[in-house]
Image (cartoon, rainbow, N blue to C red; front, top):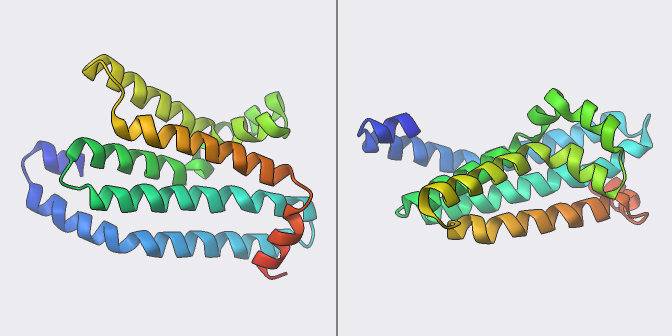
Length: 178
């Protein structure tokens, strides 16, 4: 998409963007569905795994909000591309975790802060780089980052709190349908 804009092919970018917009709800539904299937498979044998179900729910919510806002703000290219970057980064958490998640888990554990570090290090590092880019290139933080990054970080705190709360596993059990 970036290449298409850089090379002046906005019409193709817009057509692919429409296809992408159609895929957003499909991705969210299949992403949550895949996690439900995974939980149904693993949780009977490893019940402690069920508490993790909150993390992909949060990631899908952030993706949905960012992608929806990007669609609504497509005429504001600076906001649009930042929202796409934030949303896309959040759904790549599993990829980041396969790369360094186990090492971060070993270093930080699974406590309140450890859960945040080993689950959200990838998108958080990308958010930090994006904010640094804003500061260096614009001498200010773009309003998307100034509003969405704190909201995402707050969501990560809430996600870790739910993850560690004793009331969550029975709720997750019901949501997963086990």
